[in-house]
Amino acid sequence: MLALAASGAAAQTPGRAQLERVVAGQHEATVKALQDWIALPTIAAEKRNVAEGADYMRRLALDAGFQQARVVQSGGVPGVFATLDAGAPVTLGIYFMYDVKQYEPSEWASPPLAGQLYDRAGEGQAIRGRGAVNQKGPETAFLAALKAFKASGRKLPVNLVLVAEGEEEIASPNFPTIVADPEVAAALKKTVGVFIPAASQGQDGQAGITLGAKGAVEFQLIVGGETSDKYPKADVHSSNYARIESPAWRLVKALDTLVADDGHTPTIDGFMDNVAPLTPRQKELIAQRVAVTDEAKEKKALGIGRWINDEDFQTSSERFLGQPTVNIQGLVSGYTGVGGKTVLPSRAEAKLEFRLVPNMTRDEVVTKLKAHLAKRGFDDVKVVVSGGYGPNQTDENSPFIQAQKRVFERLKIPYTLTPRNAGSWPGVVFNGAPLNLPTGQFGIGRGGGAHAPDEWFLIKSGNPKVAGIDEATMLYVDYLYEVAKLGRR
Image (cartoon, rainbow, N blue to C red; front, side, top):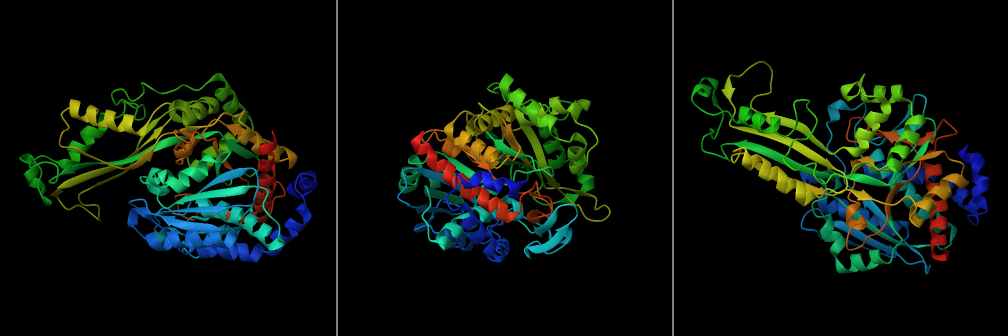
């Protein structure tokens, strides 16, 4: 379908056939570029490849045709700011993340930094590696589109402003500092909006336009000798539990106050006060997505047999996109090796995150969490916030979103509009004051396993309805020409 639809886009994309040949000719180089990028992971949580990752991102931008690119210090992991002036009347903003999640090599079918190509059953040729789909694969496709313009000797139809960060995977604690840089902020103000490249297709070729994303706040709750003198400074014999407080049980008691007895409804005082309910239109959009999604396949992919409360697919989908959450990512305390060790742990830590919906903010929920714990006497529970930001939302009728719809319609790619992503990205930094720009996630292609072992991204699709990396690249070529028209509307 994608190949046949290309003729429909040719009238809107000058010289499209030539660009398509260039993209095909640079295929091997594009794959190699993705493999090389995968081989250099920036992991903010481990402070790994901080300087190297930023410099590499800077060089990637220059290689793709940006005339200037510089590393922007943030107080944490640096960002990268780049501009490409094509002398066009319209300027488009692009957001990249160049960092990735941690990984445990023993859990992978091949080394996570090898970028191994393999045949994926029922899909085609894929690449396996940390960052393959989140987000280096889609971002490489976008850079390949710019390289195709450069190789063919033609100017882009729009100017570009790129802002990249290396801390997205720890909830972007310093990204507002990067965007507030005077030169960065001034450049972004000239844009018609900011998008992040994405691989949005399902196995049936259905793509998606996402109108927003939940916000996220990552934090830790810590109890132990460092928070009160009633706990031991080091693990002691478990017989002492008869006379010494247990940090582990104290943490469990504190955690139990954060959700109701059902295990998932937030009960932090005031947490739900500012939650904006889904509108009738948003519920309609969710229903349209439900109608074209195989519920059984979605459950199988998640490894579950039922939704919360045995809810139907529509209800669970509304919960998925409309409900804020208080999630425990992990619990760490005491001995976790083989057998028992009969110790009283000196420390207990829970790693949690909030997912936020409009009209919640990071500062609001952090303040409410601390007040909630204090009110119940948990003054010995230390709250450490490592990052976070609020939700973002863009009107489906904005010209920015309409341009994305026209590209899909011209290419005859079926798509749905999703009110928001249940996951998060810091689009609110662009979407909120003072920039107030439309934002979105846009692209085709397929991948999976983000944050998990054996993360993958499709390189050559065996399904004519689903894009490989070259088709994803050409979509961005078409998109740039469509965005160029926004100056004439």
